[in-house]
Image 1 (tube, rainbow, N blue to C red):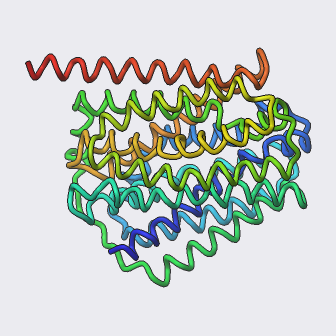
Image 2: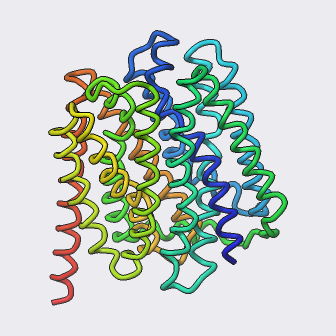
Image 3: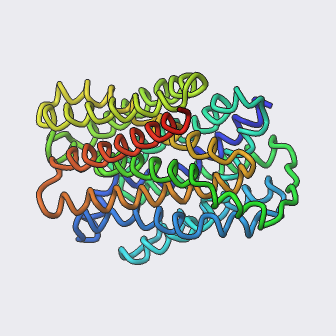
Length: 381
């Protein structure tokens, strides 16, 4: 079973590198196509917006297809998208190429995460999902900084060439070693019935605020290190690598903590990330201090998606794939919100102020957590 989990993580690594690898090369793309950094940010936010809107519908559409074949089809579309991105001659062509695979992204994520959660005992589900999320973490460790390094050594096109290689390797690995995964017949009405659950909507709101806070600042990390900390391209690549490496430990710790208490892990994450952003704002202009900030930030940040996912899926465990598709839509809507709000902050003030954008969103997430837990205590009494 662990081999299956690691293969699913490999696939997640492939699509996550495509989605988030652009983060480190936004300044180069903006300069090449002569667009503003906030407009270049749409390469991330438009991708996420498509997922947010179409995610659940695409999962329902592919619901009766063999799961292994569905995931291999998704990886093939991601490969084609990156080839088109490599050949893009203007910004609009690049943006369209980025949007193309976004429609199918939720199909892979929902299958991978639901398979991980349902393939082990209930109490071990957070750890199993954590292994699959490890593909996302490793994409942060290797995919994002390597994309940045490729752009720095060659051109921004080389970053998309890297994504082609990553997706091909992921597809070959899954085609050879992943066992057949026949679809389980589930009626649309039974899946849609989970939308009546108030707890699910509360957890989705909490997840949306948390992830928005994460990406309001992280989505512009390369720009922040460039403009505020005054780091070179190679230094930024190194910082992104450090951010991702520490995130591996953070993702592992989040999985362990979630197995003990989902609620406590959530509020600890919110508080810790808010404090980190206060330090980020204070230390932003100091290179030496920023290295320490990046270590702490990466360690805390990376567990956010896993924590959000477990919160949402635990609210409706009877329909794992559909709920995971809703979470994927919610998470990517949150990425869009975070990237958009962060871009607006940069456009109206400067990139240094994005830390406060994240802090405000985290405060709102904390308020939702307090109201939710307070209501539960009142109900119990």
